[in-house]
Length: 214
Image (tube, rainbow, N blue to C red; front, side, top):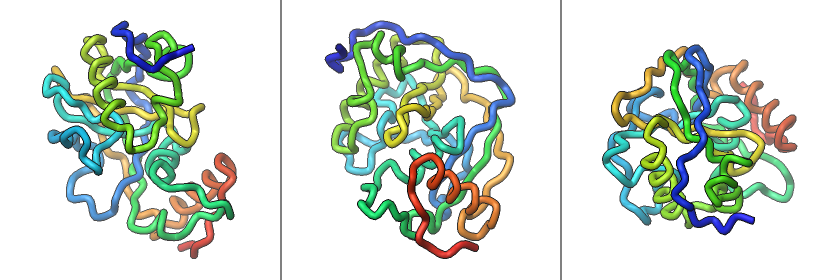
């Protein structure tokens, strides 16, 4: 049984293939492109820090995405929201958010940190899918894993609200991974995007959208 103290072992690698579709749900008011790498990780213990933001400058900047729509919804909409007992999703959760569709344009090796791969590192989902109050621990652990897995240019980890799905954090060490933006739309101003997100909430999470559709 994992004790959730990283054992220093190099992570197993998985290959993310050129041409792979990636998804990201983010604030509509963001002033940077959907494929931009954030060059400035927040200090440890910052209340707005992300779960795996690098804590060592050797890893460079970072970019969070998901390889599936389900993963994007889990991380981009549900991650920091308490699921209501009514199982109803308010309009607020979808408002002022965009759905970006991206394409990976080169092969990338990712450090696998989920399921049996996490167990090899003495970690499990209770640690990797923690609440935001524990993000300083996951950040330092994720950074250590990437530093001990020098071929990895991304971290693949379980989504907090859907452990069977993974999310990805790319890092720009050595060379920034090549990722292009295919499209980006405001979810509640685009009928197709809204239906995709609402159907995903319903079919994969058992949550009903309670707001108005475009």
